[in-house]
Structure formats: structure tokens, C-alpha cells
Length: 506
Figure: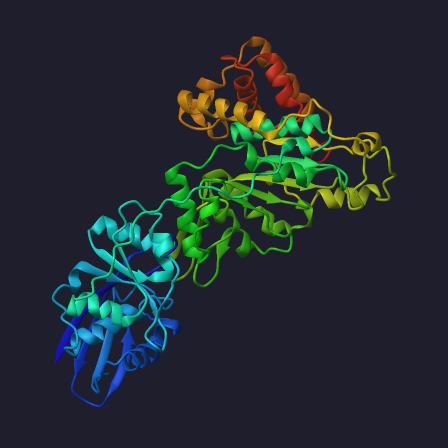
């Protein structure tokens, strides 16, 4: 009887728990069995491994083979264990020297020819392996992901024979994957100067970018709501190296791979309004990240907000507060980061022209109320800025952009300076101020208290909205270069809040 042990990594959210692959060859009728909670794709690795070994020129042992994936109570999914199982069979049958296998972790799906195909979740596995001091052999097609990680213990292989030559014969060692941090060389972001008019909405977009505030744009069709939202990423600071790696890790789990041209650019996700709750926040029998996690450290844009199902929108409430998504299933719990900035756009009514002086609205009051009632109060209460985007006069559209129109580069400079001020003062953006930090950095004088008390009474603001106004006013003061929040800053912040009973953006 012969026993060989190799090592691999499972996938659980953005974590990669270790898996010990125990391969036991015993006498008896030829059989190949895999235990340790394998799902269908793992069970099918028996046929892939058998064909890969034979087609690569190795002998497949005609013995009773048992593969145990430990720990046995951890569910195993996917084809990532193929390479570890195949190497274990080779070592157990004496076709490969297994004395140094304790130093390695093996990831990869095997083709029937013995070629090694890419798998999902390579970055989390590499990060975990680096902490344990083990080296990792992975598919060549995953090398670009490994190159994102500093000092990655990664060695890329294209075929099972390459792995055998590296581990067994040691005459053709695999080259270590060198770090190659990509540079953002993608197309330039759309310019804010291309949006005609909408000075109030542009000001709100600058405030949202400066303080990382959530923003709701309300107006008739064709007024530039989507154009404004698409220009937000061009106003935001570049991703830090750690943030870019976190975003790349989520893409790796989703199987999307890195985007070298967008490495330091903040993600911008724009799901269609037919998206399900699982598509938005993640889930499934094998928990996978959703749009809110793919927008981590970036922007989630929801166009035609009331067209989303209400229960789908309400699942955003917890991620907006906590910055994470926890998906619980009977067998496991997966957690994904989801620290995103929400930008939403909507029409004021079903026909889109309620309050439009240029066109009459055809909707009844009940239709308008039902349409706006698709958005729950708790969700709207988590959106810091509610701004109207009115129709642009035809005379303005017919001419060229006015000379005074600011370009995104100029607005971005103010945003970057404002962000640096916030981080130096409190360590987080204003939108994330909570508790004692909120009271300390958003203190207001007696005149400010009096103004805010009147606003609370007239607008019917909640306690959450009260703190929301303070955070927005803090951002407005930072943009103005003021250390204290003045009444004019509070007044501007209050002007971007919804009035009680008037609907979003009113």
C-alpha cells in the first residue's frame, strides 16, 4: 500500500482554505474514488486525471485508488484539484519523487491531453500560500494574475509533463512568475465639460466625489443623468495599490481575470434593471460575488432605479451601511467586501415628465405615487444627495459648450485636495464618519443648530438624515477650504435633501 500527500486550496468567498489531498493506492479491483465532500465537478476529475495521465505518457495504476480531500467537512467545488490529484497518483505509484511535495501547492484543471487549464480564485490562493511559506504551481493562463502580487510564490506550467519535469526529474525547472504591476493606459474618462448646463447637478457630483457620498439624480429623460454618472470615475482618485489588489482578488474569484489597462482606475459597474438580487449582491449554491462586490472601492450606477424590483433594491441597505456582504447557506458562509459608492438615476414619474415645464405629464397622482413608492424609505435614507436634473433649454443644446465649462481635470484637482484633507484629519472620507468622530469633526455653532432645527421641522428629516446633512456640509466646507462648518454650508447641504412627502429629488 502506498500513500502520497499533495496540497491545494479550496475557494470560499475571497478566502482560500487549505486542502490536503491524500492519495492511497491499495491492492484490489481497480477503482478510483474521491471522498471529502466533493461536488460534481470534483468527482468528474477522476476521468480527467485518468485520461491526462495516459495521454501524457504515464502509466495509470490498475489499483484501488482512494483520494481524500481533507478537511472532509469543507465542501469542495470546481476543477482546481485536478493537478494535485494527478501529481498525487504519480507520486503514489512511484512515477514521481514525492519527497519535496510538502513545499508545494498545486492548482489547475487538467485537459484530457494533460494540458493545464486556468481556474478561478488564483489570487486568494496565492495570498494564503504566501503566508504559509509554500510555493504554488498554477496554470500559465493564470500567470497574469500572479504577476499582480508582490513576491508571489508562483510558478506557471502549461502541461502535466512540465510539472513532472520540475518536481520529479528536476532537469527542467519552472520559472518563477515575476511581478509585473500593470499601468493604467486605458482610454481617457469622459469629460464633465461635455455635459451641457446642469450646473447644480455638476456641483452635486463634485461634492459626491469629494466626500464619497451616495447620489440620486432625478429628472426627465434625456437631461444628462447617465452622462453625469459616467463621469464620476474621472473625478475620483486612483486606487491605492492595496485597493487595486482587493478589486483584482474579487475579479479573480469571479473568474474575470485582471484588466491591466484599468489597474488603478476605480471600478464602474452598471447592472441592468432586470438584475436579480443574487446578481446584485452575490449568492448561489456556490457563493459568488455580485455587482456590489465587483464595484468594491468604485462606483455602482443604477439607472432607472424604480424599474428594479423593490426586494432587489432593499438588499442594498446592509452593504451600504457595513461595506460587506455576508451570504449564509446551510453548508457554509461566505463574506465579500462591498465598499462602493452608489449613484442612481430615475425619472420623476412613469412618463418621465412630471415637473417638466416643456412637456405635460400624462400620469395621474396615484401613478406617480406608486412609481415613487417602489423605492423604500430606508433605502432613500441611505442616499446622501438627492438632486434634480431639469431639462436643458434647446438654445443651450444647439450651441457649443460654453467656454466657462469646467473640465474633469480641474474638478478632480479639487476633489483630490479635499480627499487628502479628510484623510489627514480623520483617516476616512466624510461619508464614513460615525459616532464620536462625526461629532468631533462636524461640530456646528448656534446659528448652524438653529438653521438645522428649522430644516428638520420643515423637511421632516430623520436622525440618519440629520447626520447625513452634517457629513455633506463637512464636505462642502472642505471644498471651500474652511475648518468650521458655516451656516451657508449647512444650507447648501439641506438644499440637496428630499422634502417629506414630496418624493425623491423633490
